[in-house]
Length: 259
Ligand code: COA
Image (spheres, rainbow, N blue to C red):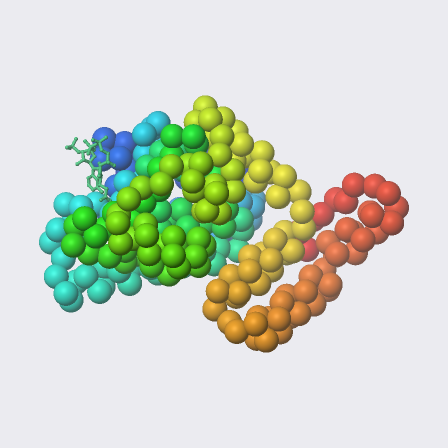
């Protein structure tokens, strides 16, 4: 079905694996298009409630945009190229179902940017993060200057982007770029455990939480608070809310149905 990604459904979880290990899973146009299609499929499939995104092999999640492809860009096509990648990464960031990135090695350039578009990041101990685009005479174009700055702060983002230096998984954890670091052999299990635990919750609460948190990037505080109240009220109208509160009061486990 796909040439450059592997797609697996495990219960209510989809596992999307970028599969160009001989090129360290570098993102070419085909990978981006297939990623987009796979996410659309996950969005449309009712039985898929969450997604794990990772890379094939034990060396790289994604070592960046495909440098052979980007070497052909000029000032005009460069803008289209950046917009195209940004559109797909925005789609992932706004995805209504939780997306965990399991970073299994290098996450460089577009790889770091792709990981940052996901809702949560966990990393293997061998993972390395970087925005090395300046080494090629360019800057990040798939959201790196914006998302890295918001995630780890201006000073650290300036350092990483201006020097092009990589940071290891431990530093990424200290910086808040990832929320968890585990041995490579445990990475997918850990991602599944976290995602399955998240998916026990009310799914409308999860979707509205993602939307409200994303809104914090876009809106001034007063508008963000209004949006939060809107999302809160959506949750208050759900069956899951009735079930969650009743279950608490009746001292039992809630059985959420996603409605
Ligand atoms: N685009 C295209 N091909 C890439 C790539 C990328 N971003 N990153 C790695 N590859 C390819 C290499 O060209 C090599 O292919 P080959 O075997 O056909 O020559 C293969 O993947 C393995 O990479 P290699 O460089 O030999 O591995 P390494 O262990 O020596 O180094 C890295 C690993 C990640 C440090 C190095 O590959 C690298 O610096 N990659 C580019 C990172 C980058 O600048 N990303 C941002 C792009 S905008």
